[in-house]
Length: 126
Image 1 (cartoon, one colour):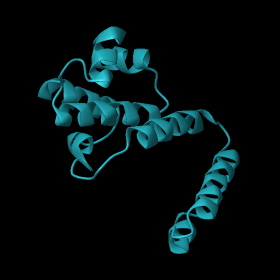
Image 2: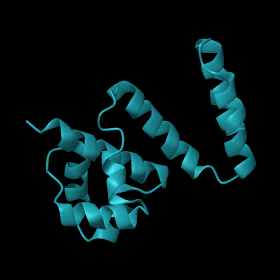
Image 3: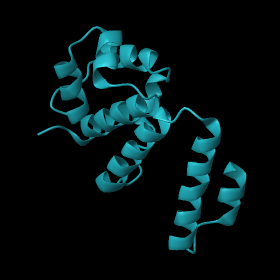
Image 4: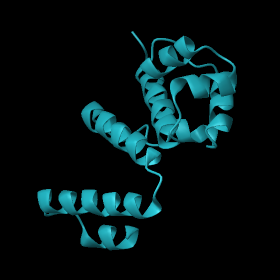
């Protein structure tokens, strides 16, 4: 069974890849491993060595510490998976205007579903 930290790191790899709109094949090619190996890293089936994590960080233009950010915060796999799917789809939208409209739409939906969602967060991100 994978260690919870290894699971967390694997999820962060997947999130960063999706944020950049990369496929597993594309990232695997950039870091010099097979698609299947990257799949295993993201699924938490194989541990990621420090040197490989550094390569992944460089390929995704993030600091290596990115993969540990939020480690102490409680996470929800369902929310993480949904957010990753949304980020991947949003990264593929070519028009900046449409991306901004979609962002505002999701923020508006979140505001109507959670009355305790601070309005200043919406204003600050607009």
